[in-house]
Length: 93
Image (cartoon, rainbow, N blue to C red; front, top):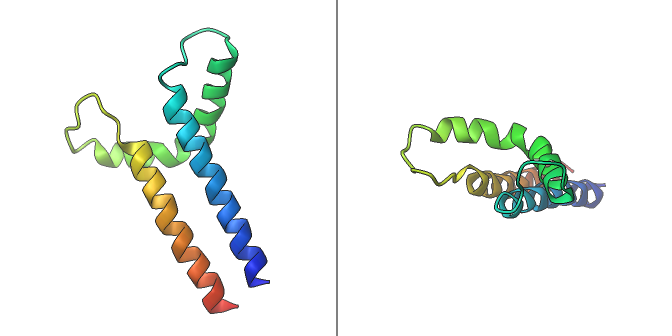
């Protein structure tokens, strides 16, 4: 049971990380309009914005200029939370 839950948590986090990387890379190529690249980018943004927006808001106190590190911080937080949740799963079960 614990292994199945741990794998589910791992896969969920891997999908989130994939979407964050996709979002970051495609932000360079997605323009306005209805191109397939823009559609994929918008999909990735819609799925990851609930994670990235609070981080961006918290980081607005720091002057990072034109660079947005919120996606990188979200990536790191997902990794930390994944590790903690998997440890808790194995402690409980």
